[in-house]
Amino acid sequence: MLEAFRENGYEVSLTDLYEAVSVILIGLGSAILTVGSLGCCGACCKLKSFIITYTVIVLAVTIAEIVCAVLLFTMRKEMESTLQPMLQASIRNSYTGDAGVDVTTLGFNFLFTEWDCCGVHNYTDLHLATKWDRSVMLYGFQFTMAIPLMCCKLDGTFPNMVIPKDALCALYPHSSNSNYHKGCYAEVEKSINKYQYIIIGSGIGVLVLEIGSIIASIYLFKELLFLKRKLLAVTPRTPRVWGVLNF
Image (cartoon, rainbow, N blue to C red; front, top):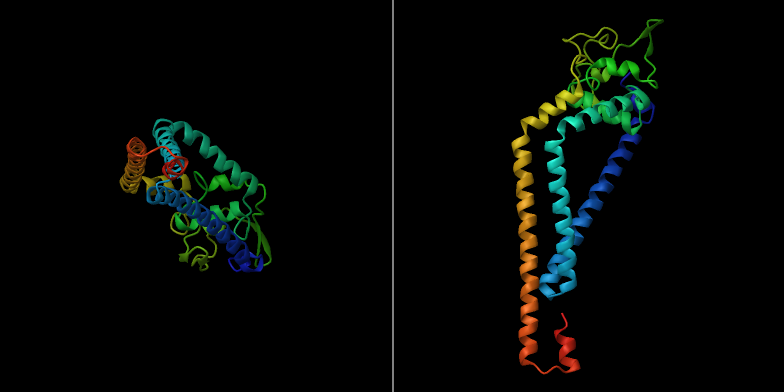
């Protein structure tokens, strides 16, 4: 059944997904590069408009990050009560099983294999999937799968897994041959909590760097204004001089 991935265009779909993620990351990197270039050009060439634009953008991003962090810590319970039903609805409306090639199915199958879990809370979430055909022919008889093979204990990493040693784990799952009882939401949450101090420390570091950039750009802007006033005070106000000092 795992070989069905390639027969159903699994590799092509996964490549498309990687390309989409790559485009997003390239776009994000380009945006960061553009903003950084504005700040560098403004500082090197003494361009007030560039410095102002850079400061406003970084300030807006910093405020947005602070707001998101505050909401994350103060409304965690509310977010969980909203997110979990949304994930269950995604499984119910979009999950198509082991050989699915849509983004939703690929995402859940990745979670199942990489976090050794099954469903949002447990395998029963998958029984509500309206697009997953659970029937399978085996030895001339039709059986109903209790879990997808992705919820079995597999060797290898996604998407290069091997057939499970217990080939009947999808029909008769138990704790020794599958992860049917472990929900992905709890497992991912455990991983986040495990590295929460590293995540928080990195976030604080980025925030300090952004605030430092804002302070530096404001200081540079004030210095440019001071320099302009000082030069105008000792320089005749001719059109030519005014054009040179209009930075």
